[in-house]
Image 1 (tube, rainbow, N blue to C red):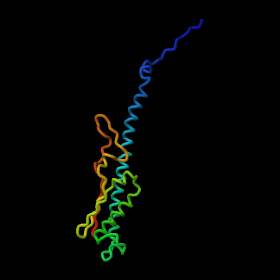
Image 2 (image 1 turned 180 degrees about the vertical axis):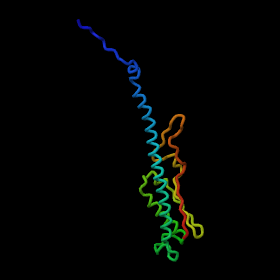
Image 3 (image 1 turned 180 degrees about the horizontal axis):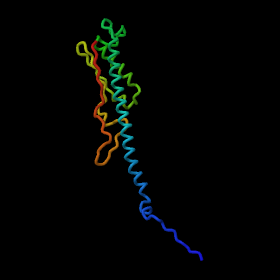
Image 4 (image 1 turned 90 degrees about the vertical axis):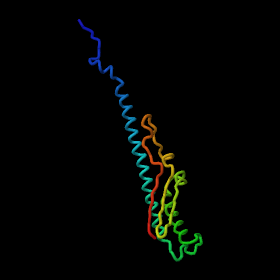
Length: 160
C-alpha cells in the first residue's frame, strides 16, 4: 500500500522572506548609486578646479612674453603695456579652457589686474552651484547630494 505525502515547506521562514532580497537590493542599490554619483560629480568639479588653476597659470605665463618697449609688436590692437598684458593673459587663459562646453565657456570670467609690477589673474565661474555640469541629487531630509561650491575660481600672480 502506497502512502501519499503532500509536500510542505520544511522551513516556514523561507515563505515569509520570499521578497526580502529584492527589497534589500533596492535599498542598497539606491545608496550605492548615490555614493557613485557623488564621486563622479566631485571628480568633475575637481577637474574643472584644476583646469582653472592651469588656465590662470598659463595666462600669467603668457603675460611675461609681452615686450615693454613694443607691447603690441606693431599690431596696434592694444593701447599701452598694461592693456597688452591684460589682453595676452585673458586670451591665453580662455584658450586653455577651450575644451569646456559652450554653455559653460560663456559663464567663465577672466579678470586680470595689473598692480604696479604684479599681475593677478582671476578665472571664475560665478554661481557654479546653481548650474553645475552634473546636477546634484535632492534627497529628502539630507538636501542636495553632493553639496557644491557657489563659485569655482582660481588665482595666479606673477611679477612682471
